[in-house]
Length: 256
Ligand code: UZR
Ligand code: MG
Image 1: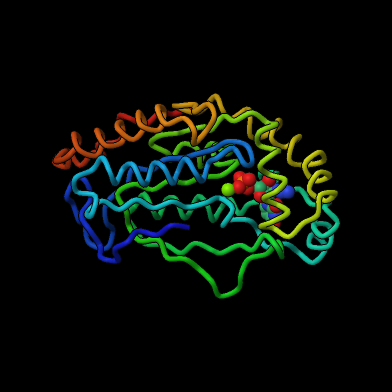
Image 2: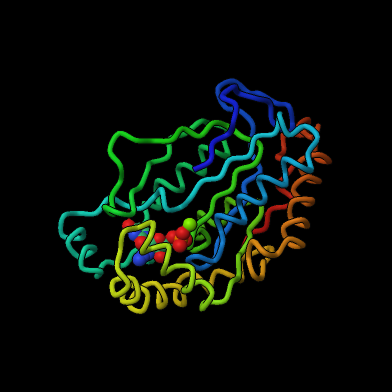
């Protein structure tokens, strides 16, 4: 989780502060299969938004991962997970109520706390939370962020990182072995039994909800530049629209 650099409550694009609740950030959802490059695309967007923006010291961009919202497993589920028989790629593996609540808090300009998750133990890290402060742009990335309509409808912009599945597998295997402490047998079994079928059943069908599909992921600098310039335009040209009391981003929002 990358946090905003400043802890102060800053003014949003519309310069409006209404009591406890602060600005409404521009909320971007980023989805795609496992190891498609979602995190890297988010990182590039954050970096480039800084470069393209003269006021980037003022601009706060925050990235949150859906992985932080994995449900804590029951002892029985934990045993299944150790044997590679638990489906972490199913929509129900996440605490979707908490995701919804968190995104609503973010949209209302309230600061919120994100749980911390440990892939090695498949569990939430006790007493560890990350505080997310109100920001101008919030990226929320994960394999199933477009699955539930009530969550999907909250995004002002939806991106889908579309990377070939063999490329994704080639990245996933070393990542699970080196960073998540697993052996090759476990990783390939999990992939064939859960990751691949769940991608096809739950993740891939959400591609149609994306506003922009990014082929090849983070390598696609042209797509990322276009997206960053569009975000920049929205943040700058919609300024001062607060008189109507209407959210300036509303017109960029699509119901699906
Ligand atoms: P990305 N995941 C784990 O491997 N272990 C956990 O405890 C929780 C999640 C994996 C999950 C999914 N599947 O494919 C992946 N498994 O994290 C999503 N197995 O993360 O989008 O970064 O690939
Ligand atoms: Mg990831």
